[in-house]
Length: 374
Image (cartoon, rainbow, N blue to C red; front, side, top):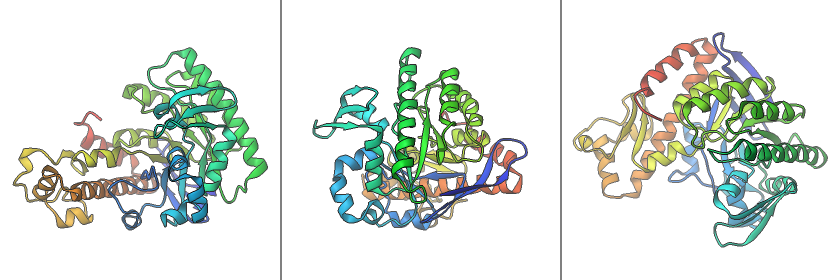
């Protein structure tokens, strides 16, 4: 992996860059659709490629449990299993271990947990997580970290922070000793909840190691927007400028805009696809709820400025009808449109950074989405 910053915005910390992977080039800033179990819900991977997405995310925890590493290894790795030939990032599974699993037992060695599927007992060490991702063959691997919920006490957050730093150090050493850096990149994750001093400490400790990139984790987990923005503004400048910066789990247009203005390069979130399945669409005029009664006889496209397959072929009235009668195609069309919006949205931001107009573009999108409490 090679990362280059091409352009910096003169009025903020926003930047546009390029990732070069063996499997393709990824232009920043960018958004990754989430293929949790090796698939994006209600969206064929061929459509992801047609929309122009250059990278997606899959989940280590879920793939480890089902179909299991033996199946993925026998297929030749996750890319072959999914028949997706562009770069894939796999998260460590730590968030899912702590949020989905029963009877977690955490120690310096790692975390013991029971599967949310069948109650079977498992153990993840920092080294185990990298070995799992080796089998998956992802282009970017994430270290094992401890993501705390919100709210959390300062003491509990500090204990989690200590383990996160320790696990990151072990992961880095194991990575250097056992992996080809040209084949798989490794990102560290900054934790510390909403406590500024903890965030500073974690960022500075992790920056001592030559990780391929750095992520900000533990945000967008229920904290107020103001705290999200405060911690983002504090943490991003502490990360090495010449390395990619990744904001984990953020898919709101307003929060993406804020993070990009602070120098963040990459994002992922289930939000655009999840709200699509619930009947909410992102458009150039803001959010719309397609199941609302006033769209019953609205024979205009969902978004007049969108040229995606859905907007070129279907009306709000038809999409409302499909949703109201429970047709599976409603989930497919809504998801297709929302991901088309996200790609166009991110492309618009990247173009504005390259052309020196990010300030105006940010203001435009903030006006459009300001009426919605995201």
